[in-house]
Image (cartoon, rainbow, N blue to C red; front, side, top):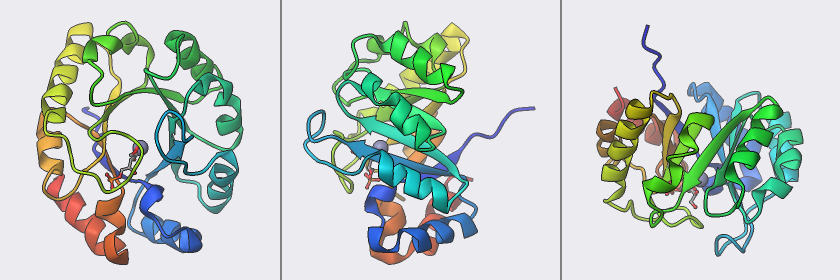
Length: 221
Ligand code: DX5
Ligand code: ZN
């Protein structure tokens, strides 16, 4: 049986943090299974978001899978903290950690899934040796740091080449795409082979969460 892995992961970065609990409950009611949490350190990316304390607050609100995207330098120093906060998937940037294999292995030893992310300007060849060891690959389709940016069109080709590489190596990491995913871009990324679609602005825009989510979901059928 082929496993259906396509899903939309709302990025809480675009949520109204004053109504976090209400927003999460609305996403649960829509059948969302995984939330995407963007962690920014003001160093790896030119913005600061939130840290493990907020992840643990979110963990208390919901049982949904928490996909934590670490846009931080030296993520290896914070793995335990984000694990203890309740993350189910921890994704680190290949550009941010020198011993990527060690970092990925440490995440998996904790019993959670490990992902590796690459920025738009980082070539896929950076991933070749790590692919057999990761549960997920995150292709950034914008330069990380902010929600609501425009999808970089060359990301589509990158996703399809990654899919070929994964098939060639006979490994099974999930392909996740993050940045500028909306009603105009989601089907291009789908056709290229993406399976997890992170969407911030496109889900939370104008607080029309239900309608926005439904529009994206319909485009994935
Ligand atoms: C960008 C973050 C994304 C962001 C996506 O630095 O990694 O997850 O929240 O936001 P949208 O979907 O608005 O591009
Ligand atoms: Zn992200």
